[in-house]
Length: 417
Ligand code: ATP
Ligand code: MG
Image (cartoon, rainbow, N blue to C red; front, side, top):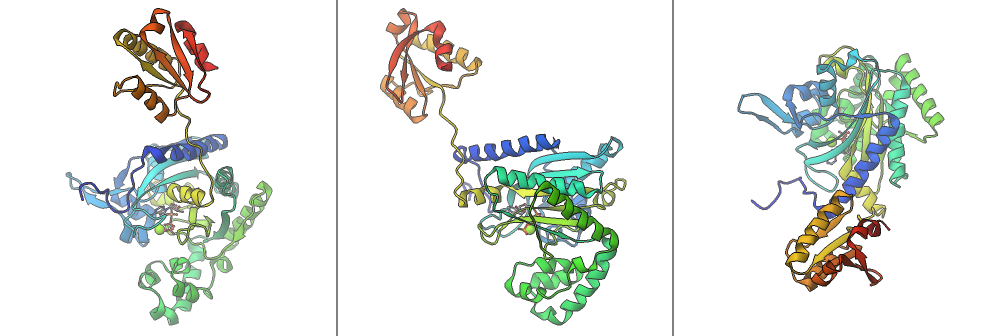
């Protein structure tokens, strides 16, 4: 117990961390190219934010949140998703009063009490972006374009983009009515979750992953057939902009997204290669969320992309992320005076930007050479009494076995070669 991480959580060991650094670096660089700025919000928020923001009727709020009372008797919730906190911050700091749009990106852990399985954890991580302050479909197209570029750049271009429109509260109400009527005779055959969804969120039944519910929902009325003129035009605009960007998409009327706040655009990047947990990235437009949370009427659009699923997908696709190279040098010392010189040298080289290591176990010469091998140092820089007296070091190239004496003051230049 004591030595097991809680169910659904994972340690990130150094053997894996470089992969995270790699995808994070790619994501941040891409966001920068698109003009998105980083935002960081707290790990926890007032529970009410998610009840309002994500929506009381969603699976997340009903079943999946990590909620507790703190010592001040406030109800606190670990963030289950990234968008609501960013909206809260945007409103709190009156960023809507600045010139718009506002373009944020974030990298954040999220917490959901779910049944852990491959690609589904209780603590997971997301990349996300949001654009606030424009209802133009160009923003939706840009958000989708960034996700596409990111997946392409990582070499997993085969992940498919699926788009849909979930309409606005007005046209959705009509669809909801029709959907409930259609599902009514099948009610008893729905899974327990969907029976639950029937009243509070019937649209969610359309994307239930259970075989039987899928069969039932196959003939259900689709939102696309109920769009009002405004939502219809928006959807057409989006498709036009995507085509202009050169982005391929599939229209998929079953994409409804799990959060209540979506309006108009809903999209997912989906793959069949990592089993049932095939949605790598999901997002859409949420024109009423900012108002719902207590801000002015400001529209928004964004996505969340699961980092664990992304890495799983890359692994399954056989995409290797190169392991970082070993250090430039291991400095090997022999004797007390040589050690003093060695420490001075190591610090000097590190301050000049070289990656240099010492054997902190202070083994004998043979042990220190083994250490240099283990850490994959490019060069072994040996300082013994003899070298020191001659004012230099012996540098051995571990790969070629070549070795030569280098005067002390020439070491940085030699390492640069
Ligand atoms: P799903 O339908 O798979 O439960 P979701 O609709 O709940 O996904 P979102 O809330 O849209 O997911 O979150 C965005 C992304 O975060 C997902 O596309 C997925 O990549 C990732 N994600 C969501 N839940 C988890 C989880 N429990 N573990 C790992 N990644 C997750
Ligand atoms: Mg979910």
